[in-house]
Image (cartoon, rainbow, N blue to C red; front, side, top):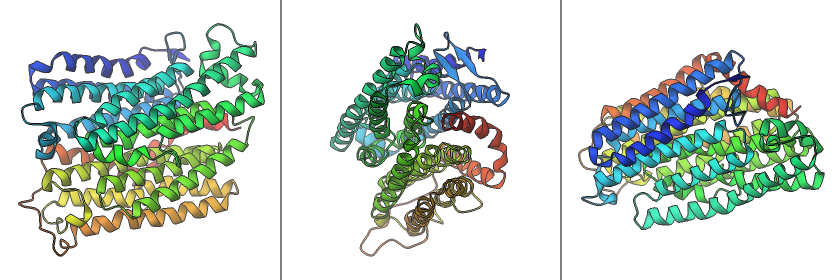
Length: 502
């Protein structure tokens, strides 16, 4: 363990920058966007610095062990930081597209943009705070804070569709997260009652983990149930997922990128951090995790197959992909945790890419329904290639990164003897390819459907939109060709969870 300022800087930088953006609303859009990009880049750089320290064997602490960064925490911070920076860069020109400005209202754009960017930075900051805190109650506070900031972003357009989605999002997640609060309080109270921890130790996750087996069985089971319902709701685990399609579809695309690529991962992180403490004493939790994971992956992709709206399609696909992550890490074995966390990374890349592609299509055509699009391959070649890369990667198609992460999850399930789950995972991958590749072919290769007016003059989106897309597509390809470059990092993260599962 090594004391460091980095865990605090990781979330204080975006939170402070968000406050500056709110205060500097009158200084102009370009200055505000410059602050956002600089803060996002600094946040990603802090995450990379912590990852480097963790790979070398360090565990970083701050504020008397209230903040603690091990391999698992560092993985989340890097993913959130990098995706947050790319989403911020993507937003610079996305906010100029007519649909965005029309839904905000003429004459209100400049004022509302400072609110948008301030909330965006606070959203990133609260997610990172939840990833580095070692206090179980502060973990809940950070998760709830990210719910409030993201809820305002989901409803940002402030029209009927956005308000309905935002209301549903805040209502369902607040109810769900309340269960998580009950679970966290139960864990704290039961840990304090053991008499083996003193002072603030019953609040520290790293300390409670050592005495989790001493908690009364009934209390432990009730706490686990509350935590699964609470954090599982925000993670989009079925059957707690109904908020997700509306929120992802109606939020501005840069926000959709963050919701799907990182926010639901941060909620799953909170779930495995807390529930994972009980896995050594209650191996039945592993069975429940695999059942929930396979149910989630299959239900999500079946619902995705019937979608015409691209953003809703990608949202239901996110539900499905979360099932793979849960099934992997829920096993508690080293291979399962490694595969689940690898898929966490590959899904963040692939789904962030696909939502950016959907945003590019909206920017260029003003449309997002598959039935209203067609024949765009020649007009939008970069977007088309990136769309196919994201679709194939999430389908587990070589040579992209999703192939290796899904293969590892398959092998982990087979190694654990749950062959039925491995078969369901493979079948779901085939359905994922159908759900994602079919609309890609229709949008870019097939002519527009009969009776549908083709969009007006369409051309490729500006470089500030396609550069983040190309960066994610390249990352998916590189991790597919040389996946070993992330093995040391994933190894440190997987060992944290695998220790819980012994």
